Image (cartoon, rainbow, N blue to C red; front, side):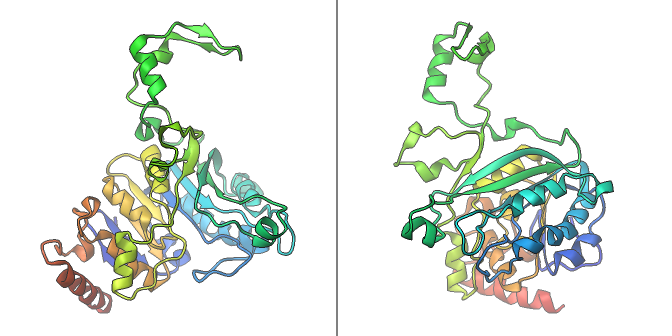
Length: 357
């Protein structure tokens, strides 16, 4: 899917990435055309980041400019999933409420100046590799514990958005497999919950919690003993030698400093879309959302105003032994039959030519 009147910065078989301000590009996307917006906007952090971030006092009104366009481009049963981290009040060991103020504003009726969204559910991204900040309160004075969770708001324009948790089922635990093999007698638990005979039925997987979890982060550490709630996404974003970072280094391109873990868009896309649906990320950064959408057979649109970040994101789609990228031809050119060094040089050359046409 393309944006009316705009030339993509690069394209793949299923997606298009655009260089520019989202506030200028979003109005050119046809109304009611997007199934899922999955994004991580700049947070209202105390320290200014290279990618730009807005002060907490101004954040809600700043974000509402985008929210009005999100509501316009989403299909009636589409979803908006926002990863948004919390922050601290400068000089004090107390938390800002800006991300709660934001969701309250988004869920107010349009007639009251709100976004007209419903809060479908809170999800949580637990990053086990987060540093213990702010150091003053965590490691120096020891007054607080490490802040390692981002809230992920799942919003929708309809109380019944398109969603199917069968798309994100998790493998059964060993105890559940044993229960299904040996059978289960219906009975009441001590909590007085009445467990029916359906509890032992094989449904091809367990319904996940609202913690988004990348189990690979725990392999060899706590293995199968980990039991995370289903609405928490547990995934680190500290990889130092994946294809994206390696090719950024080799091509002297600045990588995005705050990258999505793969598990987050994978969970959102699996839950809220089907093959062929359209996924939008208006703050694309390194374009993990577009990359995962492509791997899962969804169409995608990525927007970002930083050319270096968008250039670096093309490296996700180069097939250097990456199975997910095999069908993603960057700039609509079949580069994958070339040797790696020649392919990277060709990609860089074609990107330059493409932007000056």
